[in-house]
Image 1 (tube, rainbow, N blue to C red):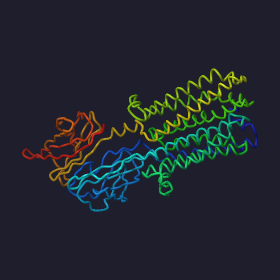
Image 2 (cartoon, rainbow, N blue to C red):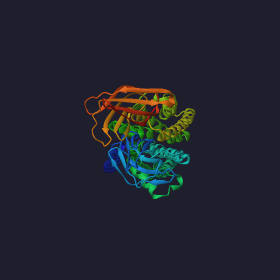
Image 3 (tube, rainbow, N blue to C red):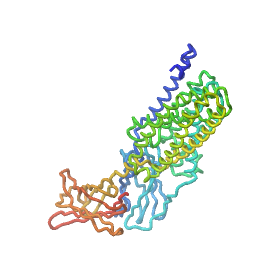
Image 4 (spheres, helix red, strand yellow):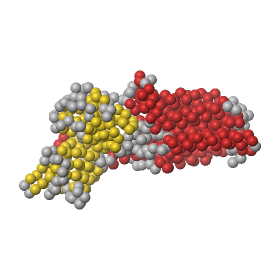
Length: 545
């Protein structure tokens, strides 16, 4: 410990610096607690709507409702009339996982589009739309769902530069303060990386606000964009990242006596910033995933941040290069071990099944990252076990070879930053699995009878159906028999008929049902009211892949 914290050897100055470091670390840890107060789950998925998508209604609904797999915050709610006129919907309230929306005006006959955009607990916006018709269907109005590639590119580039600021900048400042000794090689690069991060962090917040509201880059200067971005969980990441970047800059520009505590607090801030938002930090159990993200983040910053200062020190044949290399090589092995364990654990939590590595965009990006990491770890192992000892002994030729190898490591690290930034646009398999396991529900309403039908899970394959049968005026209906009929004539599938059972809780159930293909099915309920009276009601239902 004395080799790592030599400041504790001093008397009054050491105590003062120790108190400074402790205070900074206390502030950083308080920020992560504040950022973690709201429980976050998976990427939000829409599981139920009223009216149902594709429904044909006899009367104008007084309200709309959207039910998600987790609590959300509405950003933009719009009703598009049959003639294409958009009507903003501002009257809404949140009830657990349901957004209840007031209908502001009487609607005419034809097909309408209810377009929604909400922010999920992990800080990522989710959007979609549903169609319903009043009286009779008409040609649906056009609602653009084109990808805003300029904005998406800006988000991706902003992420990369933010990573450079946090990992190469703050991590580099830590390396200069704790590992480099008297060596100052790479300080200009580290300072430039920190400054890049200080620019990229607020810009990324603005891009987050644009993405959340579905607005183009030209609206970046609007105050509502920045308020919206700050209101998401990513706002915490940006605020803490700015603190970490500021601490890194202070460690570079301030007196040497405070460089180490500032750099240490900045390194901790990198981990806190990454743990404050994002797919991995939002996964359950959060008591495990947030600390893993924290450790993963500071491990990357320690490793990547030291590369440029160490490479430049070796290239310049500095007298301090050998001690710098010796300190780095002694500490990098446990750091890499923690980094690898945290990364593998997070990958297992996010991906869940091996097939998801090839079946999902998230998994394929992870495979690319793993390939780069294998190359990086192999190169680092060669450097550590074959070149380091000779370089520490002062061999100029080996130092040159090690410098070139470190340059390749830096390029691989930058490529990994680019891959990791791409995860911003891909929900993890964990979130997709949770969404797929959610039921699909539909309310079927007719004059003689009505029903609430739920099919669990709501995707193709083995499912179970549950039905609550009521009279047309929402009263109880004591049916003698209920038969579920599912049909999909456009796929050449004959109707699936299953008799429902009554388990005794007031509902009717159909178990051991297999829906062979996804898509829009027609569900019909044949309700035997008496020996001479049968009511048939039907509605469309969308089965997910």
